[in-house]
Length: 194
Image (cartoon, rainbow, N blue to C red; front, side, top):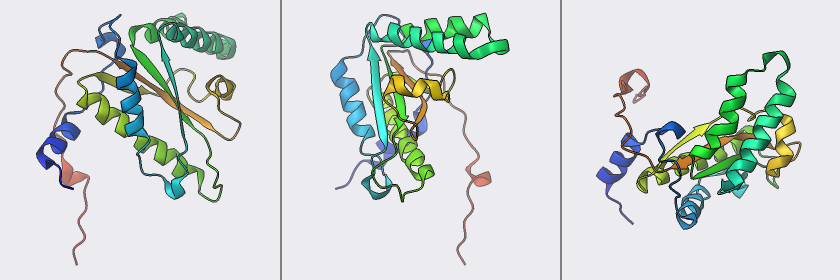
């Protein structure tokens, strides 16, 4: 099977993070589109077919549940580092999105596979989400802020002690993302031919 390489190159090179402040608040992406995006995510490469991803999708009033949970957890655990601005952001940012996908890594059945490889597989799945969101003409971004690495957050997302919460992917309708800058590939690629 052959694909149009120019189209694939264009998609990959023009993918951009689009942030919640750029979303059209109140406009909802069809759940069927989100489901297709997540099916694409599950086709990511993964060692031993461990399929270590767990996606929890928040939309509608579920966005408020996520906002309430993460702001409450932040307030309970922040201690001296508590910031009103951070608390408010955790309460309000989710409500700007159409859908938010909590990105979980569940240790697969095959524990001989190193944990880092399960994490890498989930990152590949997130790249599939990014590319799919772009292909559908939507905006999105992966954030690892807020409560992402807090052990107390895991159970809310169906994750166990050995699992990890790896962030949140926000999706919404947005205008045209800003142009990216050309990367100097010569500094990042080493060729060994002989």
